[in-house]
Image (cartoon, rainbow, N blue to C red; front, side):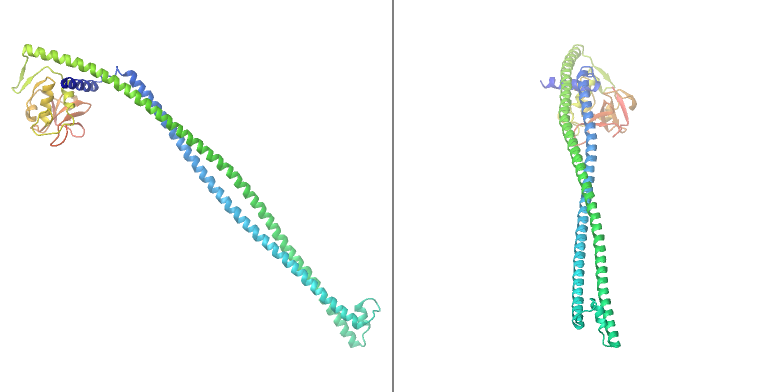
Length: 395
């Protein structure tokens, strides 16, 4: 049972390395490609929507800033309107105060005239000022009376002039403030209208951002579905691969059983420089068996099945693949077969480091090799470019 499982792993690794599944899994591979293409298209669409959403959100923030600026300007304008109204109210009070003062002056003047009339007595001309002058007792009295009349006239004129000037000044100032208030009211009305327009723009921009967010969420939901399609297609391809692997493993097992039977019948053994007894196994099995040991730890001088050193891995894989008995020492392995260049490597070729060789690995194709590295570390694969061997041999 264990041997059959090993053969299945060997055959799978061999077919994967050789590309034998490409034809059998063509339909599944196309499905995977189509599903991945749909995922890529969805991601591109989502990225474009995200960019639009960021622009829409930036626009909302910009409009919000403008609305805030307008609101501040409206408040400032209203404050100026309130200040202007207060000034207008103040001027109205001053005009009323001036009118009261004029009224008071007229009352004083009236009292003076009444007093003067009492001094004159009955009026002869009907004009208190003329009668006052005509009743002068002497020239000096006439001069005195004339001076008094002039004073009265002057006081009356000054009072009237003061009233007119005060009223004109207060009215002018009040009119200026009322004009200023009208201008401020109009300014505020325009600011309010601008703010209302910005509020409308912000509402639309917010709606656009919400629509884009919904589209992105819809795309994400669709992406999940598409990713499930990729997973299903991948699983289908893997199932086809497993089926092909099992068939190939059965065929390989039958072929190895036939080879073993022939070897037993003919006693076929070839000696190479007295240290290598060749068999008729395949290099693909050799590589696959070596790969199947990945993860097992390095132990010096071990040749499996649970632990290996570098040459022990080569010896074990060759024996299990039916390639014969190899010497368990890197420097001796470097003497079998023939030299090949690193530029023309084939899977199953042996790679060496040092002269004499102190390390050996098995080339598995694609610029990679499998080897047991050093104490405590697992059997693993590595790239030739990361640690390049000095030379190679093919046996």
